[in-house]
Structure formats: structure tokens, C-alpha cells
Length: 395
Image 1 (cartoon, rainbow, N blue to C red):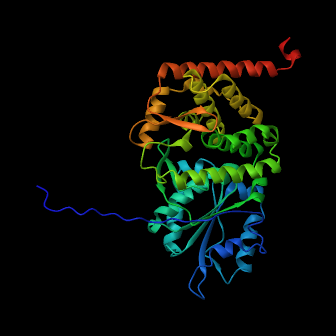
Image 2 (image 1 turned 135 degrees about the vertical axis):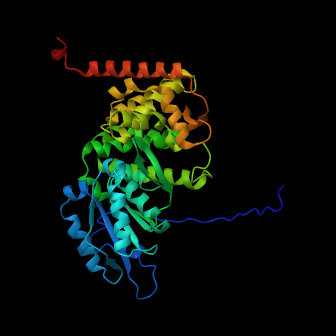
Image 3 (image 1 turned 135 degrees about the horizontal axis):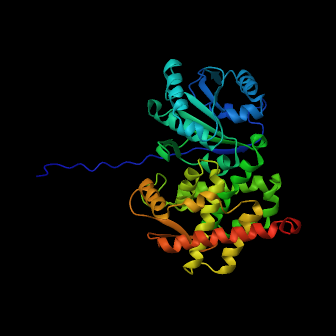
């Protein structure tokens, strides 16, 4: 028999800046120093920099730039050690070495919850270092500096951190807002074109579910985006980040306690495709295929018309995405949906389209129909490839 019950309820307000700049590590740019200046008078921020090996390899001077920046802002910043170079890409998420090394640095360098970690790199590095920072001492202050399009317009601006476990993507993770995000457009120059292009998929995604005008702009700019023209790429990053932040801020579920995940449009299959391809498919490339698949499914259900579906598909293709991969032929639809439901918790909740700029949540996917959509997508992409082959090759 219940004798006593106390209903505990409280609210915690989170606030963090997402800043866009150039040359963040140039001593004349005070942004980083200013972000860490909120300390007692005379105190300095104890800072550990973690740098993606891919970035340090492409920009060999970045390690020296960090040290010179700290020296120029010595009144604010105390480097606790030389910048730590970590492995980039999915390796940093599927192998716990970086996380273990981070815990060792926190212990040996006596870092605390008032210390700062500045993670510079791609989305995978931000995820892994973010997870480590969130779990050491229950949370050090994390400043993210994404070096990829995907990091700047999506993965780096939100509140999630995660690493993989036994092949399961993002199985271990936290919902922990960063202390700040610094998007430095100059960092993008070090990233391969295919990696920069892959990040555009997340802009198409959020436009399709939230902003028709943004999608129309992406469609008009698709050829400029395909060649990564800065006049199109940079506004795309800013608007995409704005929409992701608005979803987190205004949708009433920033820590995803419910089952709806509109920002995961196209992701139920994308996550599995990444695994099946052993991560040869970049995340954005897998998301593009996943969106194409769900667009086909929305069309088959009569939720969107042929013209809208074809416009979406053409936009993705003209930006440079290949909407097929051998992994698609090995996709177990039922298993992928079940894994997605298990990862999110609660009932299955998949975002589909009932119009460009308008997502809708459904709780059931007809497996045979989805398999037919896979076949449709594969056939359409084979035909598209054949049509682009020079005539002399076909003869």
C-alpha cells in the first residue's frame, strides 16, 4: 500500500551560441577567447583541444595556429597540453580508444567541470569527443568547431553525442548541449569535395519537412551547390542550422523523450545502409538514398504527386547524389525498421511527406510496398546511369 508520494518537478534552461565566422584561430579574431572569458577575475580557462587527424593532415599549420592563438590570448586561455590529434571518421566512433584516452587526460591533467574541451573536426569526431566530454565528471564544457558541411549545418549544432557499439550506430550516447558552437567557413576548404557535398543532404532533408521556400531555393541553386560554390554553400549552411536549431528549440522534445523524430527523415534506412556498406557510404550519401526511398513511398501512398516527387529526385541527382548503392539490394526492411524503432524507443514513428515542406508522422510501414519502392529506385537509377553513358560506349 502506498503511504507517501512526492511529485518532483523542475525545469532547466539551456542556452548556447552558434557562431559563424572565418579564421577563428587567427589571433586577431577574439571569438574563441571571448566565449571562454566568463570566469572569475584573474582566472584562466583550462583548455584541451582535440583535433581531427584529417584536418591536421590537410592543414598542417592548424596545430601551430592553436598554440599561437592561446599565446596571443594568454590572459584567458591556458592550454593544458599540446593539441591532441584524434583519428577522424567512423573509426573514432566505433573504436573506444579516443574516449579512453580522453578520460585519461581528464584524470592526469586534473580537468574539471569548469574546464573546456574544444573539439575541431568532422561529425564523427565531434560525436566521440562530445560523448567523452559529457560523461567525464558528468560533463566538461564542450566547444564544437565543425570542419565539415554536415557538422556545421546539422551534427555539430544540436544536443546529441554518441559512439557506436558492436556495430550498432550511436548505441551509446547522451543528450548534452554544447557550451558553444563555432562554425568557421575557412575550415571547410580542407575537406574533400565528396564529403562537403554529402552534408548538403541534411539541408534537403530539413527543407523537405519544414520549409518549402528553402527547398525551392535549394532547387534553384542545385548546380551551384553541386560545384560547392561558396555563394550557395554558406547561406545553405546557415539556413539549415537555423532550421535544425528551431526544431530542437520549438518542437517541445529537445531530448527526444517521445517517439517522433522529424529530423530523422530518411534515416531509418540510411543508418542500416551505412552499416551494410561498412561505412563506405558517407552519412549524407546514405541519407540522400533514404530520402529518395521515402519520397517514393510517399508517392506510392498518394501523399505527394508525381511532379513533387520528380522535383525532389532531380534536385538530389543534380546536386550530385547517386540514389542507389549495392547495399540497398541487401536492405532488410523489416529489420531496419525494427532497429530504428528500438533506437528511438516507443512505437515506430517514421516521417513521410504530404507535400514539399510538410512532413507527417506515420506509425506503420507496409513492408511489401517499401520493397517495391526499393526496386523502383534501383530501376530508375540504372536507367538514369544508362542515359548518361556516351553513345560510343553503348555501341
